Image (cartoon, rainbow, N blue to C red; front, side):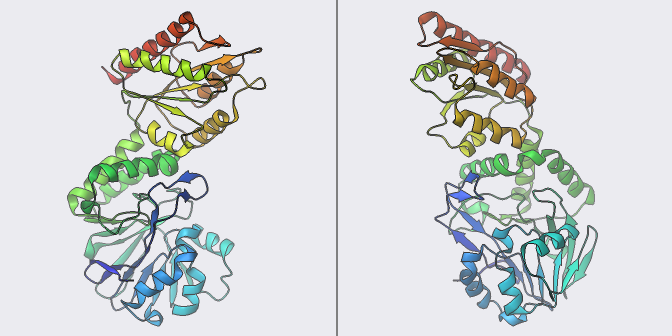
Length: 402
């Protein structure tokens, strides 16, 4: 297992998880993921974060090709989630570091996860720095991006920001840098990662981007804990611009229709609603919750500002997969969206009321009334669905200034 030198005497010593498809138990990682760990050799040798515990041997092998384990002087824990700290107890045992640096809330998290008795923990805050020889390491707390303990580490001499979970992607490749991979693939993976993990913290993303700009620090490499590394000022700026775009959630002329169905009546309605959008020149994606995972739906929602839900009435409510999707979406707190609702029913017909209420609770604007039909759609009911799509498309175009 060979390390990759990303800067002079700065090495990637992480692990690539090609088979991972479940990310943290709630999101898919269709292309696998990486656990990025970085080692800096100077007068003091410093390791930044670790890897998921089952990749310990991989990390140790890469580290051993750079330095002897007992020569690791410091460990910096930018983030204590187990996929980045899972090997920490073993590394403390093997390396016997002089110091372990973490944020104030990082110490609390570290003590909650592991038996830290006797560990040389040193708490650092924004503005604190240490010297390791020819380099300084400056610490910046980034609370709630995406855990309370999160911080980033900046090495000014290398213009390098080691940024834990911010700016990451779930992707497993033999390439280590963004410029080595098709840009469209990278952008898709960034959209997927952001909208399933970082989206609720968008206001903090904007504050962090502004703070970095105000600090005037030079960055020509972003080294996240997942995915590919951004190198060169142009790629770093491209990443910052993309994150600002994601966080601002500007209106986009695109729709997504999300549904589940019992006997295909609601499914047929979904296609009629889509025809209405299409007739107005608004691209639309139809997603069936029995075949499309909720994290895939959120990825698509990252590109769309009109979100339409469909479900038949089930036990005076909606189908379980639709309820699950709404719960997941609510937690991620999307902003600047218009919504719509439709569904079929046999007896009581609460589906549209339930769907609409959930979207209103999330702050969605609801420019048109929902459509519900009893049992099997007819030509007239399909026409109502089509017209709802048309009206939603017009409302969206108005938001987009089209």
